[in-house]
Image 1 (spheres, rainbow, N blue to C red):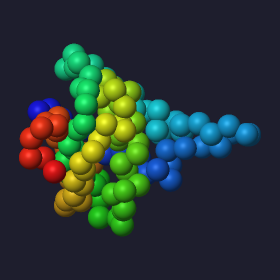
Image 2 (cartoon, rainbow, N blue to C red):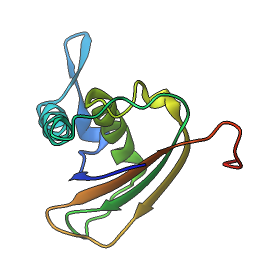
Image 3 (tube, one colour):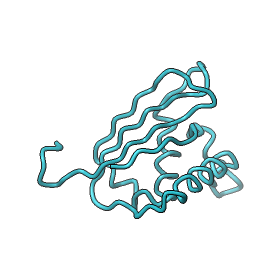
Length: 121
């Protein structure tokens, strides 16, 4: 099992930018990903393999209306880029909860492997 607190991710609406015919990660998206990678690098992780279960608690920075599904893609990509798992397609079980605001906004992520022959269904 692995638990970490990370900065609040940008909305998917602000994560991608079109530049001509290309789609790129925005400056805000790259900054978020770099912060997550730095936090995870300090833990010297070995990427998890196999199916995973994630529990994510989103503590937004303020009371503005936010959809937690818009924050998930940036978070999952940053976790992959930071070496927590090989690919976010390994996520087989996901629980996401939006909590009360906690400035400047954080996300608490707990990841555990799913035992293939266990009762994790």
